[in-house]
Length: 82
Length: 380
Image (cartoon, rainbow over all chains, first blue to last red):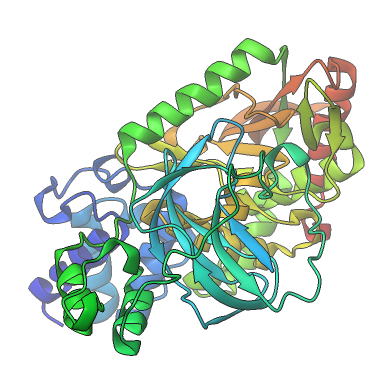
């Protein structure tokens, strides 16, 4: 999966979680919880979706590493290609 | 014969608009089936039935706003009408008042072809509202097809303006009628969070637990022990304790709404079951697909704003309930443990109680019980 494909996947799943917003339009450095008004249950659903689509199982201790679009992209890319 | 009626989905609801039929004449219905969708100020609510039988007729056309208690459909073959255990008569799905006139089949006496009748039933179109173009004015399939094409699609979803009005009405009534008292206590969540992390380390994301389910279960067990916080109060009849603990779980709607649908029988659910219910409820609340029993059955409310950085919240009781428990975010705070000062994961729990039913002394014991339960998460 290329970085662009991974970015598209993350944005798509964020849009599924928070359809009222457009994840593609937010600042890549913004806190996803604030930018998309998502709570801990939404975030867990987001991680569940990424796990199903990519096989990457994000442990709780790594949650903070996915709190922005850019960081989530870097984290997932590292897990898939690192 | 059983009349399936417009339910009351809260003390502030006087009427609802029928927007979709999910069962049609000739369909068998079973207890728990979703039969219709009703638009209320709180959004589109799926209305369940609590008898077994066969729908014989629909009595109200789609798009019609009718008072609570109005017969919507007739159900035949109901051997007995079970008395559904409910927390309170005030919010029962049974009618608040009988409908003004005996229900009349909308399609009785209307000349229509079998195909037209079938499609009309499927689309929820009242034959009586159509003009037939067949022999002697008989309604034929084409007449129904034209009506179906012209009819607006069933509306589902949330109207946040209406939801705000409903919240305002309920909260204004609460502040007007309920003599609130407020208590707060700090709960050491270190043991619970450590246990949770250990549990979740062994699980994939889709089966992990959130701290919310620990607090829900703790409140449910505490409410079972202290029934003065679980039930409803009506001025005419006084306090009615709930037989079970149905927790109204406050769910924020992005864009500015709030729903508090009930998770039933929380005291009997495992943490995994609670988590599954919570996921399902949150998804449906935000999709405008809540069910009638979830809107009317809550016996106590729990609200958590920790995700939003709030340290403590003091709730407004949702009438006719008599208590709301609030949880804030967990923060590391210094605490004296033995002779040492340690950083502990600390969460503020609050209680808003109804002075007509309980007082601060009992409220303090109730909060203390929640604290005790959260110190042994494995037993929840």
